Length: 157
Image 1 (spheres, rainbow, N blue to C red):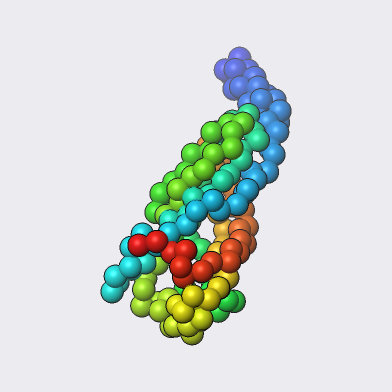
Image 2 (image 1 turned 90 degrees about the vertical axis):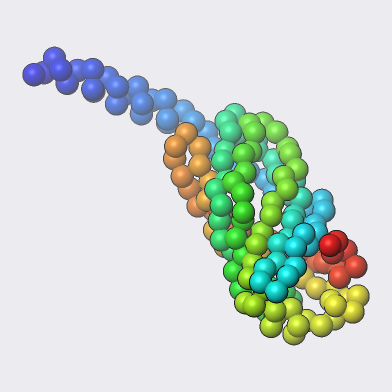
């Protein structure tokens, strides 16, 4: 019986040794290079953000679809969801097209309370929530709180 436990114990020791050597460096959000409103109809709004993200780690990280709270000029608009998972290649800075979808009914009251943006003014768009990431089968959640000034003239349909 002791002989059959020996490979199992050796396996656990090797697994512990290998995973304890993995060093994690924070993924760096380097800004938004472009943004556009790709869809606006009676039911939904889709916003596309070209986000520059750097993964300084020696392994690929997968970002899972996540849900965030959306704010315009510090007024809560409702929730928005990422439509796609992202793959952050190891040791690379890349621009990722991240598409968010929201229900127009939920966010319309907040948009119209910030009428200044509709007439060429500026507003601050803020995304806040938890981002789900995964590497080597291990998942972790990270806090996200990002704000960007936008103008109505910059939104492309």
